[in-house]
Length: 548
Image (cartoon, rainbow, N blue to C red; front, side, top):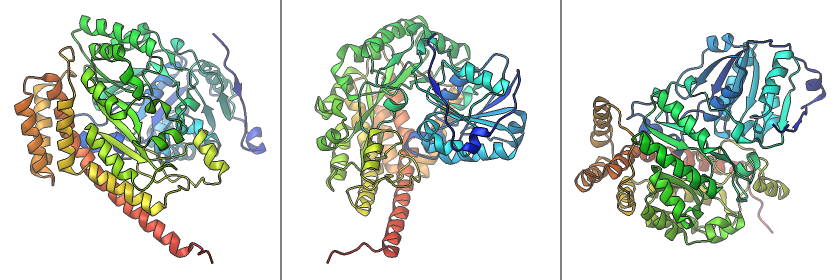
């Protein structure tokens, strides 16, 4: 095994002198995943209708759990599905926390509680890797980077009392040596889908993306045998639902992805298609016909694309060049015809955006019939090329949130803030108008050419299905403000695709997703109005100077 380079740094000389007692063997470690605020990604309203509590589990934490010494006793608390009690923290010798930027507030609260109760803390994950200096002020130990190959050394340091304040891991680990995640630590009944990871890294150079900073531009993949072992473990634990291939770009190494899909196809056939897959990919998937066909045969149903913008100038500005190689509308049409249903991410706030971008976004989303259009403001994430550019230009602002929850940009945009806010608000309102949303959903089902080899996720019991439909009809079909659009779509779905199991499954999933997207659009509208009020107040307190 190659030896990863690790560097040690300290926030101050006082930190450098700080020492910690050894934890000894047999450490009791509590792994905590903080709450995630409501966003497009959480499907919160939809989860009110399902028997599960949240969409997916904390894959990173259960992967770290697999790296811990066998002598350690582990507990996992996912705050998205259960409360973290003081008793949980007091049980532990060590509290290990991972988080994304959107979980910043929850992360800080967990670390503060652990410190108040006198427990050692270690923090890692994307947020800590992006802003380690912030973490050093509130955590005992901070891990930056991927710890797969060096966590044994970190654990030994903790046991022996030699643990550093900051571990910066420079090398990218060989993921063929990464053990299978500890799925057994999860309460599987709480999750609507399960997560596995095939690759890390992306070959592209999008200016705003921190994936290439965290995981590199050379995609590293697991072996097909590793993936089959993880899936077999899930089956042995009783999992029979959706599986999210969480790779930030599943086709980053398309040759390896094609090889994996061939193996997955045989695995599915031998087990009567126990699970269905979905994943994330770049737009150039549309140019890889054999790979799309292989994904469909492996029982992939849908794919999230980073579409970002219909503006070629904005894409060119941030080096999203892969989206310029083909006409975007044609790309999505090709992917639909090949058998993959498309959902996508969109961004506003690029320097090249004009006031016409909002209408262009709506027109594009309508034209391509993408029901789940996840739109947010551009953010300059720490360590990215965009952040460095904004810093050079003196445009960075104090961040007050995340790029995934409707928080305005953390830099001064060229577009006037009130124009950007109003445009964003009007875009979200137009996309998630109930009539518009369900009409677009219907067109998406008609555009998507599902294949006979595609098998929907195995359904729960008949009683559970009846419960989902009863809650949907009660909350959406009878009590909601959008019930007319709901019934119009539902009845067309039942009459047009009663025997097409793939389209019926996907269609009902979209139906109940309206309980999330439509109310969340209203929540974003209120957030935008509040932000507009703040902008107006700032202008009143600090008037903009008028040129003489």
